[in-house]
Length: 352
Image (cartoon, rainbow, N blue to C red; front, side):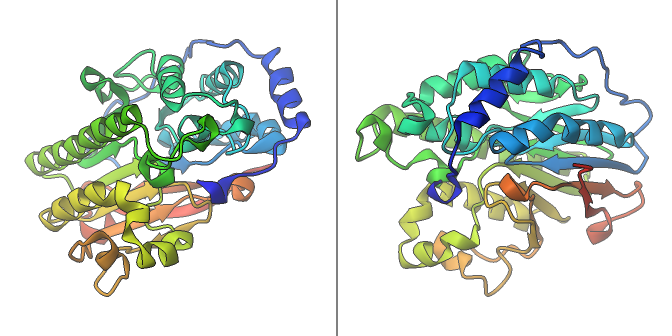
């Protein structure tokens, strides 16, 4: 999204590629996830996003990973997308560098792509790539073992059969988790101006529809399984902030500016309102930590999306970009806890 672009210096690329020389592109993780006897136990997990952005954050990223590794009680870490800023090259070399860093996680890593690593790659300063080619490369580099997490191995159910191995779901202690490929830039509907396009191309529209249909199908499947298992909460994770305050004025004046999110929001509302437990949406994209109820009664987003209120939906936006100074640690209470007591969270500062 345009509000996320940042000036990229030659120093950023020099640093990133210099670091490449000291990292294997696909160092396989030797770690295995500890998933034993957790069915009735409290546990924690972490969420980060929009990181690393630019030279300074690239330099700190290994330290940030080590901070997360040192948090031994985490059952997994979620990265909700944007592994680079919006004005730097979407190169194979950079993707390989980030993959090598991801391989150093000692916890399972659930990664869902962000718009900066494929949607926005048509921009000249990104390399004027075809975004669909970059999406294919992202899947090749980061999802070469569908059904398994990055970092330590944790099995997940994926949409590999639909060509979306990044869409995954899993369950822990009667909490259902679902990672969804939902993008900024109006869910990838903005024209590829860097390639000389003033309107979305047919191939672009086809990708958006296919991906959105798959996301909606996974949302419904996640809730269906959650009801069957009598789960205590559902946690959805994605890059796009569909309730970004910076978009509110434009979206109020013209709801079509967020039209790419409408079907996703409506599916979430439908399922939330028929699910007798809390629903949480963890996203990145807007870079500033927020915890609220975006579709509570009276919210202006209700008219924008043409949706009824969903009071049980809570949204948590993680800090990102230059504000990526912490991770959010979520605590899931033991099996006896229900309602709002199931999930709580706190921000944990990085050491650097």
